[in-house]
Image 1 (cartoon, each protein chain N blue to C red):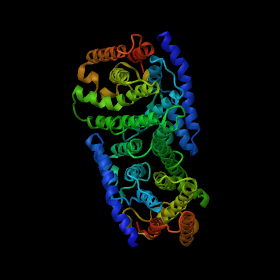
Image 2 (image 1 turned 180 degrees about the horizontal axis):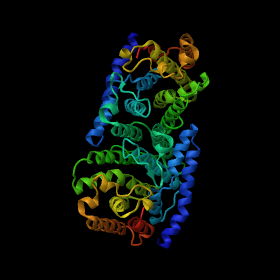
Image 3 (image 1 turned 135 degrees about the horizontal axis):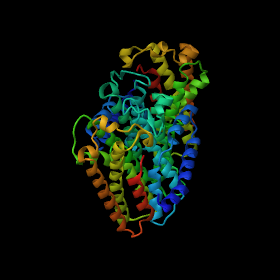
Length: 294
Length: 294
């Protein structure tokens, strides 16, 4: 990993973890519920979404005291979606990041409720941000709801389920991922732009960057299912192929998927360069996504 | 039913239904998801929470253009909680309001996701209200998140599950219901007060009213499980007794539960009278709760 990115991550990651733990510990709720929420939230995610938010602030030479709190709220929504996706009636996964999934430890009922509680709490967190003006908070809540709900992540998940028993086109696959994983990543980058008080063209360029990175991120996920091992992934490798899932390699060949990923990374970076020649950490985070092995 | 209340309900109920349908139809989401959301949202609920919100406005001689939209948002959260509660890993109910439960029609996966989508969308709805100032919207979002999440409804549901295999005290039972059903009802009444621009003492008196009504409401639910029939209830009667559940009649005897309900209704009404001798519709809604048979 590039030295800059390493320093950036070493600086921010402990504070993201700390904020997540602080937020959940400060909830006044029954102990088993808090435990179940904490278990999944602190189960060692890569925190890619909060890191993108912070990298956007860095890119725009800004700082904001609420950045970690918004990052934590996004990570809580991401975590809830994983808890629900892993349920027996959904993907039925026993392991996630090398650890037992939430319902394997706490049972299905508590897993569903811990997901619901994380989702619900994250909106309250944004409404209480101490250093952001009211209209920006409402703007974030509106965009957050859209990105994570029926018009974004949840809708994408439904489309993904619907497509399971049929062959779909690359365009349809892209539409699924634009919603299922892209929307929340895009929101993270948008939130960074809002915190930095960025204006029209900059926001548009960053959104465009986010869209391409989101697709590249998903392609890499599909590639890892083929090239990775269960050990490095922390979840069952080869599951997509075994279940005849619609993936980029399945539709485009493995090499075709890799080429497409490169193309999206390049599109993302040229979008950034319309704002600033020095794309710094945002560039390096993109490279990290290409090369990640889990 | 009292004529005033009948007119009040006949006037408002169609508009609450219309707003609910309008809100969900305007979501840009995959068809099966929208269908599943609509199915449960329009499955014939009593709309008690939006009615309380509107009755508070009436009581305070105010009107507000966003009242139906907030009422719909509350009803969406209430509906999501029913969809998730009915799941096989939770209460495992096949019928609700005389109709098949969501997962019996759409499958567990889509039921979970429809619940998640309703929950997520409701926060977006409040953030977009066109006729309310930004700070009041944020206040509502904060209170809504607290009432429906780990510190309210979801927390109460967890406590209820935890108490299933042990005997608890009336105080503990009250704490469960204060969260599980009381918190969202209290929020509905609080939202009415906020829309009416009510101030400190009035808000406190209304919150006190809400707390007592919430308990009375739950006691009546428990009584109906014993005295009602599956036909009038639209769900399986006698389930609480069969599963040896902690209920007010089980802890206090049936007559004791009825006495306690009356006491809470009276407390609620005296709280209202500190604001206004004429409690009008709010009084009558309380009576409707006492006498309801489903």
